Image (cartoon, rainbow, N blue to C red; front, top):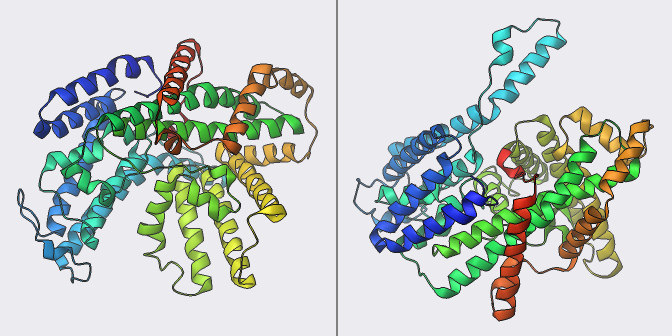
Length: 488
């Protein structure tokens, strides 16, 4: 089930709100958990068992890490991060990490490993058996997100950042909460622990949540979908002329931002409707003036997760320049692989890792960074945006070879075939041009959804309602309505 669907907007969401607010406060977490499992298992009920297994393991491991018995609160003294952890606590943390990473590794990367193995056999002239060739594993939706969330619980409890939950329903609600279940933002347990104990339900939250959801829906349906159609046409063409290739890459650049940030806006809005304040996930990333700045603004919940649970434990920047650059590369390679089980994602992560290392090296060498305003600011923004657009080609391409050919077309390398001249008539239609121009104006000058909805008046509320109405009407007529982050 996706947010931008008739089923969700007209049936599931109203039913969920009705059930949630009809229940007594003590039963709301159970009600929200059951609704979330229904939401998640709608496409494939078997996926619910996988999430339930991960939830059970981490809940029990959290109790052991906190050295608390079931249904008893942990000793607050044990929250001291300097406390020496016992072998039992370390073992419980290891079980949590291994079980989550094993599930993620098997379901997400088995097919990549199998394909790479078959390619290696073919390269060596060894025939591939029929059984090996057809074996495939179905990727459960959202497994990359909820495994990271679930792991953050045991890690935060182990580090003493928060107490373990004694109520398994509260923990199940945290892991399975449908607003951010399948595509984030990645909510770390320490960010929401207090809200699971107590939170307010106000009209202001409900109004802001409705506005966030409405604008996110409009971003997804009215901008991301048309941009995605242009991107699919160009990346799916057998040959592309240089101008068309740039237009398609720009369309994908806007598609992935408005698709993912639109979903995040809807998730944050839904969270507010149920009383939860979820972390922001985007802060105008295409206005960044460096790749470092880009990653402070893009998918911020993932960036913080990787920094706190991977980069810093690896040593961060505390073990010399060489180790710092190596840590950056490791984090970005794994970040790329987290997004998808293909070598294109690994290459995308490697490109960003190299760029981050180069920027850090230049800052350390110069002692100061170049100005972010004036002429230098424009140069920095242009080069950063260009690097991001080019790197998205790796992210979108079907293979490394496809990415190489497409980048070659953008740079004018190689002659396009005669059919390529017909592509322009499809992707430069006035409607598509208008959508991309609208996307560019919002990216360059628009407010973030959160800042725009913080103070709502009648005019803003009316604009949000109109945006939602237009998006719902468009959704009913569109035949193209993918959500690209479901595959990640």
